[in-house]
Image (cartoon, rainbow, N blue to C red; front, top):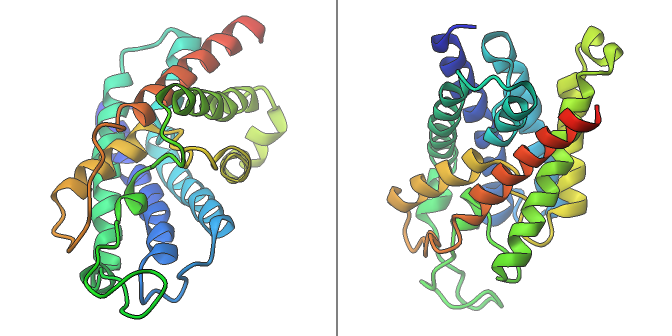
Length: 249
């Protein structure tokens, strides 16, 4: 694969991933959305389908890694680091593009970003924070616990992805990406509660950058004090998964 193919593939694939993921979060969160308050299960499946669509689309060009943690895990296992920077750059650019597209898809809802008067949600013109649509926010802010959660969740993603490569039937049938997408749904349902399961540094950092600059009314903070955790945790988890796979398999 050429550097150009890798970059284009990862940009497109990661953009689709984040478009679906941020899109489902917007659908569940924003006022005047038909899917408002439809819940965590909807979010988990939305992100899973984002992985499905993004990875399958990118696969012919780049292999469809669309996650720096996966890229690092593969590099740790194989020792091949020469093209890692191309993958990471494409993933960050794609994540930012996907966040912008999700914003445009829900533009009218973002422009109506206030709480309704007379509801339990607050008074008119009170801000309705939007960061959770784009990036992760912990339920309990504890840096050590949050970091550990992200590491465990990312190992739970990357180690099976690496092991799937040993399952000949998956590769021959072309269903590997489908299984990975269901794995992401499972991680969201089982391990997503504490931090919102970033498990992908690009998926969190790219949209957080976009959130900082988008002209969203009453958008609230972009929470840069927390931003290092959903980057460091998945990178550590990806590297650990690559090391475990290299030693044990």
